[in-house]
Amino acid sequence: MTTPNAAPQTSEPSFFSLTPDAVLDAVEAAGLDVEPVCFQLNSYENRVYDIRLASGEHVVAKFYRPGRWTAEQILEEHALLSELERAEVPVAPVMPFPDGTTVRRTSGSGIYYSVYKRIGGRAPEELDYEMVERLGMLCARLHTVGAERPATHRLRLSAETFIRKNLDFLESSTLLPAHVAPHYLAAANTIAEHLDLGLRGVPVHRIHGDFHRGNLVLREGVLHALDFDDLVTGPAVQDVWMLLPGRDAESRRLREAFLEAYETFRPFDRAWLTLIEPLRGLRMVSYSAWIARRWHDPSFPALFPHFGTDAYWEEAAADLEDLVGVIGGAASTRAPEPEPESDDGPTNADYFWDLKD
Image (cartoon, rainbow, N blue to C red):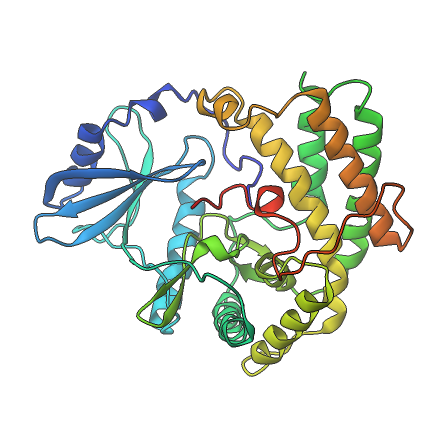
């Protein structure tokens, strides 16, 4: 789940100066003995590299996009990972540098970076009943640790932060066409109002925030949760719907199996499921705002050539208006689409833009 920038925006030319030599020099400067082997891994938001140490061990070095997170926010991600590791919840833990710190800055450019244990494996190929039960237990254990203490610097999952602030940005940009803006903004603000109402009285705590299948790895029969970059304070149902986003009957059955397994570790109020559709809308708005905020990055126009066209925004506005109808129980004004046959529901392209093969 991509978030509005939490730290002040900075100039980003230094982000693209991360040559393999610069990456290796940074990790070596932190006190790790590296081999001259460095492979860039798939990541839109940050720069992530597989690096081989002199010991033969492989680690993952993550260089955070400048201006996105403060050092305090990154350290709260690391704190949760350390707590999860101590609780024996399978994650890819952050690795302390020899001086005991977990986040450093590159010399000159000042980019924050950290090193993580590399967890090899593969994402689950399909979510059958056995797998969703395992996921339910993993998610519950993660939330149990997440609820133990607050994150004071991380963002709170709310309509104000993730919908209205993004709408302000989009409205002030030149990307949202004038003929689409009234429809898009009206639908998104309606969804924001529903989310405000739905979140009243719902407990919140530290959650993964972007808990989809692409952030899971199955290694030697053990499921590991990866990439806590989008850690937020929010309701448990955010992590639930991200794993099982479909609306069809089979998806609902799988979700119920997930929740029954979840409840072997902690309670879950089924009333919270009414938040799924407003949270779906939050993600749709966040998606458009994320690309818009990164449009100055030369890689984004190449990655998303359809973005910014009239057709893109017209479809985005229509999707939000349809979602308002779903939330309100009204019939869609557009021709109904066939229900998906699998538990995936909406496509990965719709909601999981950071999920890559």
